[in-house]
Image (cartoon, rainbow, N blue to C red; front, side, top):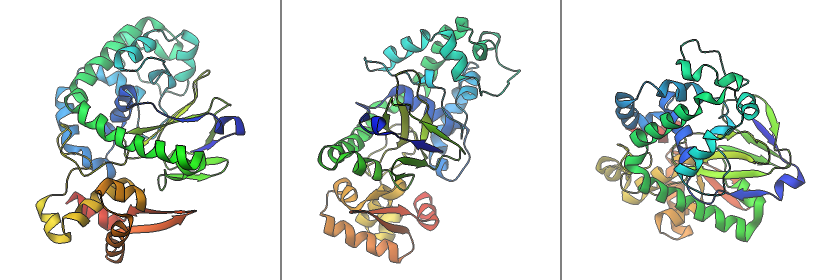
Length: 324
């Protein structure tokens, strides 16, 4: 998918103010349905959640399909933060916005009666939809929300420094390798073919814990395009979701690579620059560079230069070793 940004859009690029529970909710619903190698890191969480899903979750899974844009009304742009405020805004969605957001939704004859009219703009089912989202959040995200939010905040801090010191261009370039910035176009490796514009509303970049690839939320009204991307995480204690996506490397991996290089491999699971890696590991950029050199020679990571940044990401061999 390509997002074309005008000059007006670029003046309105901003960073999400905090971890967004609705962004995490919709992204996790996509991960719940994926079966690719990247999402395998969520297998334990996925197994636990599937055992407890309510019948109403079938509607949420239909709305948030893998490899499809998220309906904009599910991630509203609200002044007040938090799940309660976001759900209240969803409940107020008007019929025109609802119908527009679901115009490309596939026909599903098995939807419960309260959800069958949603694609036609029937808002009568919105209260039950909001309740379904609340129930799903309580089951799937609430148990590990605070540690996960802390990891998203760490990514936000890093991107905020880039925006402050180096500007929009550097912040967008830092999203590689999953997002490629070739001004004035963002190319997103989300498996969706096509392009869209932000229409002058701008772009909100949102680090997201429950993401293994970028997720696009189209612009709606004055709300900007939302780009949900996998947050760079520290090798940290478990978040409470079962096996953490960026958990501390286990003893066997640390014995094989050494504890710091094992941690380096874990941090690079979603790709980052040398300076970002150094910050996550708490080492100097020079030390981080030495570790990436060893891992690159072993065929576990790849490295490419983008302007003044050196960006690293895992090879298939590196991913397999981390998942072992």
